[in-house]
Image (cartoon, rainbow, N blue to C red; front, side):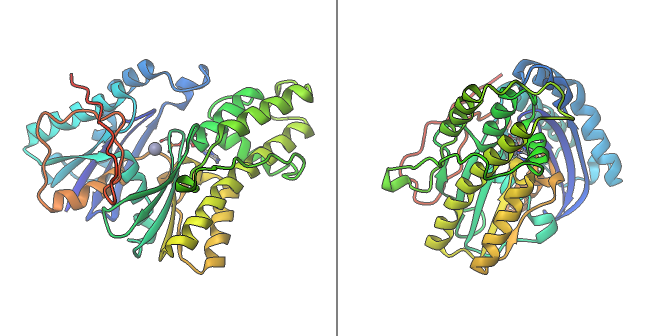
Length: 357
Ligand code: KG4
Ligand code: ZN
C-alpha cells in the first residue's frame, strides 16, 4: 500500500511516498530556513506564502522520485495540526484537492504523532510499552506508548520548548537562527563544566517529569550581562567564553531532558526508548540518551537527522494504520492548530481550536 504524505505545519514544505508505513520511496523537503534566518525566527505569513509557492512542485517531485503517478497512490496523509494555521491550511487544502480529484482516501495526522513514527524507517516498529522523548522547536514531550496509537503524556515543558531555548540563546549571543545546529557545533570546542547552570525543579509531585527551560534562558542572559560578553561578530571565530557558554548551556538542556527520561523509564519500564524531533539531531543528546538506554538495557531508536527534523515520510507512516483501517476524513477537515495527543487516562481534554477557510 502506497501512502502519499504531505507536511506543511511550520517552515518545511514536504512530501513523501511510503510503502506499507515502513519503506520510504521518496522524501522531498523544501526548507524555508534561509528565508526566515534574516528575521531571527519563523514569520508565519511568509511561511504560508512560501508553502503555497512550493507545494505543487514538492508533491510532484515526491511522486516523480518514487516513480509513480497519483493513480498508483492508495491514500493520502496530511498534517492537520498542531502548527501555524496558515501553513497547515496550505497542506490540508492541497491534499484535499488532490484526494478529491484522484478519488483517494485522505486522513489528517497529528504532527507530534508523526514525529513518534519517524523512527520506524531505520529501526522498525518499537516494542511496547515504548517511552518517547519528542524534542523540537515547538514541543518538548515525554510520551508513554503502551500499545500502537495509544499515548499517555507523562511529561511536557511548562514554558519554552527545548529547541526554542536553543534558538533564543543563539539569538542572544549573536549566533542567529536556527540556534540548535550552531550551538551543537560550537559546544564541541567548549568546556561544558565552565558554567554550572542549575536545573529547574518542578515541585508539583503530579508533574515531576515536566521540563522548564525559561529559567535557563534567563540564567544565560544574566551570565552574558555580568560577564559583559559581546555578541559574536564572526561565527567562524567565536571567543573561548562563547564556546564555554554554548557547551555549558547545551549540557544543562541535555541533563534536564535525560533526568526526566531516566525517571520516566525507571517508573514505566519501557521495552523501547524513542528519541525524535529536530533537537534529536543534537550530538550530546543522542550520546546521552544512547548511554542511558545502554545503562537501563533498553533498546533505543534514534532516527537519522533527515527523519528527526520535519518531514512527510513520518506523516505518511503515521497515517498508514488509519488508511489501512479504512478511515477517511470528511471534506470539512480543517486545521487543528493546538491539537494534543493523549488518549490514555484522559482526565481533561482541552477544547480544540478549530479554524475554517
Ligand atoms: O522538529 P523541527 O524541525 O521543527 C519543529 O517541529 O519545531 O525542530 C526544529 C528545532 C529548532 O529549534 C532547531 O534549533 C532545533 O530543532 N535543532 C537542534 C539541532 N538541530 C536542530 N537543536 C539542538 N541541536 C541540534 N543539532
Ligand atoms: Zn516537528
